[in-house]
Image (cartoon, rainbow, N blue to C red; front, side, top):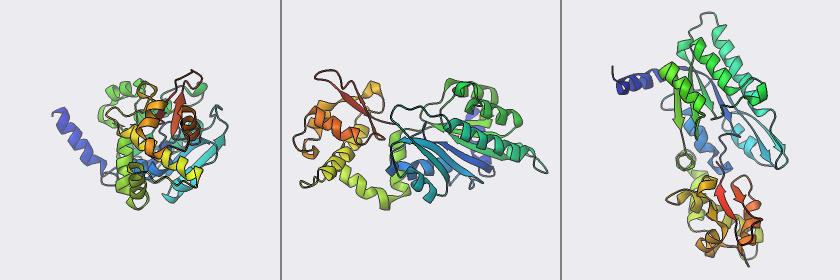
Length: 290
């Protein structure tokens, strides 16, 4: 049997899997709030998979946000902790790993264990050691050795998972995504919430009497521009100069905007953008956070 035939057979088998758990690391695979429905649609893959017995998303945010409420409306047990800028996370991996371990035990301690019929969907690319505590890669390896199937969804997988893929074949599926796919999935999954936003991003409306509205319109337009470039600005290597961004979005710029005004505006949307090199005279760049 060819590898293509084997892959097709596995995709057919997926439809009969019991999805024991859907676990999302919202810090590793982070998306803007308005694109949460897209990540949910990709993770659930409703045309291919059954509804998960448990759906959990855990993460943290710099400052307040509506992320937890948005995930809960989609049927998840959601847990987000507010942290200060630059403060390290200390619980996200541990909590999700605990959920994954429980899912494995639920299968293996059942009255008639059939691990090959069960699937865990894990949305993360994190393959680190978690400071010596139980980690995603350890839990994934335990699940695979126990005979369960694992589907890993991420922007870019840690190389350790590619090694697992070599060892376990189709038992481990790795699906790589990018911000553009998440955006498109959001448009398909929740058009009533996102079509208006997409139109605003394409033709931003500037409210001359409200600086916040102007800043929000500029941030929306900037986000769309950075993703829609031939080489999307989704990493430091593809960051765009703030001066170029301001020129490209001249009609949406806040009043009196120069590089520093643009920087000030985008810093108010820190969950969507990362700014670099602001301390270098005449410089500064920005990219979209994954």
